[in-house]
Length: 312
Length: 209
Image (cartoon, rainbow over all chains, first blue to last red; front, side, top):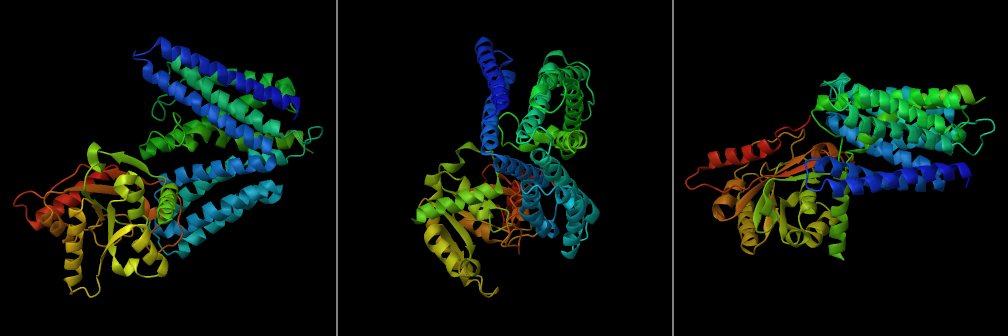
């Protein structure tokens, strides 16, 4: 295995160790105080991070197929959470079958077989047209446009957008052949670090809310400090990418801001549906969709930046 | 062998329906009760069974239509050997003898310290709404007035596997076990049916969609 991947994993491992030790010390120090709930949640999150990193590491080490399958499963679970919140009706049942069991696997199959042309248009063109046709054939016209639009939105966000993360593996970057998995790590680390840092800075320094009507947890202090510090981490990781240090900084800025945008949009959906989390599959975090909301928005933009500037 | 099969079927039901469970009454599962639930999918009874503690599950009977459970060899095997069932013969609507036979069988089951799961609407609804209750639940409650009735609200099962569809779409379901009720002294049939139904509807309160 390439040394740079070892360094990246080593870094993640040390961070998690620090987080666990800090959490342990805090839990002992504030035992029985009012801060207990916050600390318990923090420790639950750290524990879930260990598990998520372990799964991520194993699937990356299995190779391209492992990464594709991992993201396909994440898409499946995210779509499940998303469609559950969407008031689909009986007439959509067969459409949903296509969505979960044909379109989703096929999109990831296209990533695996490196067919970029089809990967880029299958959902926006063919799935886009198929979904309303299948629903119309089922004969239920009540709220037809609304139902169709919501299903299409779900498949775009949960499947199309997320699939751009493993699609980084199919890019042909001169002088970087066989190393693309580090781009996937770079994207994931920078976006997720930005989430964590925005949360930490928001909790400690946060005063002014960005959009109080959407998310009470997102503050300007958290946003600016989180985005800047995560972008600096991204810049510091330039050696693992085909980017120069400055390019790494700019790209990190773009994807952390996209990640923030994804979080705000998903919060708006949750607010509209009157729920706090999309699910409860990850202890302390909520659902899969709560964890990858920022990745959904960052992945396609990151993919196309790399594809435009760094491939032939 | 059949026990293993039961476990596998229930595990799969639990997996595809991804249910979140809410329990409003803590000592629900300790004794004999009558679970009554809204009905919108073939998954309903299995999902409820999958949520019961094993000891209790083995002593719980599903009350269902004979026509459905006897339709083919697989269903016959499942209803006779894998799970415990009480079957209602609904052949000929005017003929009430099937209903009486089922009623006395249910009472027998309850006397032997076993619970039952009933669907008082009598049939599956297609859009997840709760129809008016058939009078059966009243007669069961009257005949077994010492036994509590527990409302069980099932959400999204009609979307996971609706009436008339064979394919399961694994969305996330929700199951709420409510506080138990009993037939009040002197309560008439209509009042009891309405009250029992309201208890169930209330559990769905902030239901989505």
